[in-house]
View 1 (cartoon, one colour):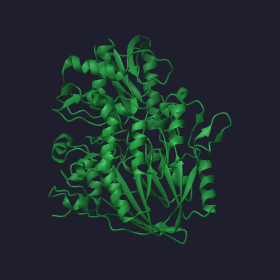
View 2: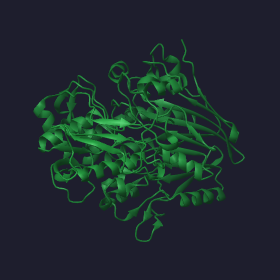
View 3: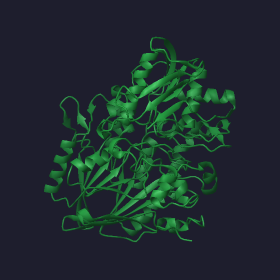
Length: 565
């Protein structure tokens, strides 16, 4: 039995571009549930230019489990559009067979059972194998890193990103852009960027004092000659860094979307002879769709930040938008046919990094092991175990965040817990041990101290309303958050489609069942405050202490958030 789509077709009649995209040969093996490296890597070379895209690795050097979201809501024009469909609706949209490898890779249903069947994903030594195979076929392929690379693990934190720089240098990228990297602090970012043997791009990274682009450190673009074609790669760092992350960590820099400047840069590179324009973006998928609508002349947007993984690009006007997932779970290959200064067609494949199928690259694997060796005892120490699968992704909650909120409530003697709605963090399957590395993978950041304070019920509502508007504003350019802030000890109703200030209601203190009183003060514990000088224990220490104390984690299904669409 063969999957009803070996290749998922994308027609672009309006732009006279022919596109072919999809899982490739690995979809053919769905029924048999058999995978081979040869099938995963098979690709019929097309055109004269190849792009390789990785993004949002979040410092995951080794294979992991990673569950895709079961809830990913779109609003406004993006309601019901990919990537804002999940589960069986997603599988139906792309012709994915239940229990198949692509079901496991791209959907959350039956995650634990399928994880036990198909194993872990990712590992940069396996990513290296895929990249090497593409380069063997197309030696001048461009490897582009979408950012969120130097953040998210125990070793990355303790080496201030050096472990990731050393390993990524082995993969020989041609360019990268940035987001969480800046939370290492300005001085460290500058030190690492100046050491890179490849381009650090950001057309929207400006000097605060002069409000000018920092051309000598973060040039807006780089021109490459590939396949007889001049290609311009423009970098776009995360626009909302000073809002989503602590401004005091990088006071010399400003960001923003800077769409007008981007349009000027596109015009500049076209005038300079670029026949193909690629935007290496950390905007997030819906923002990139709007950019494609308002900035002409971009052929390809390699999309990062929102961790979306789609088996085919989304086409907006004449621009193809390619998201490539996160945590080293996928590599995208895009072949382009560039002729007479135009993109005439493309072929795309989303390559899943099944770590039990793809052989590790020995040289890269040795570097990874060397980077981890000084910390291996700490990384592998068993802290407890779990009877529940621990995952993070989803607009309103994940079991990792439930555990973190339980720890905040218990260890800080609080009535309400707040945990940031970040998207990064691998999963742990029910029945497994929880190691220190597992805890760090979902808590590691440079501003991870836990606060304990008092907030009125009215202020708690303001917090929830502000975060909700950052996520569910119908204009993508005003979507500046991650997922919804996670709450412990507090239930509420959210009406996603209502305007700012009117989304949150029915706030309840779960310990008593009483409505939250706007005038009453409540003890609140949380972490990842953007305020400088936060005093308290580090979140990873607090969670570790809690897990040690309870021994085995068992979580009930949370129904504390009522979502009205």
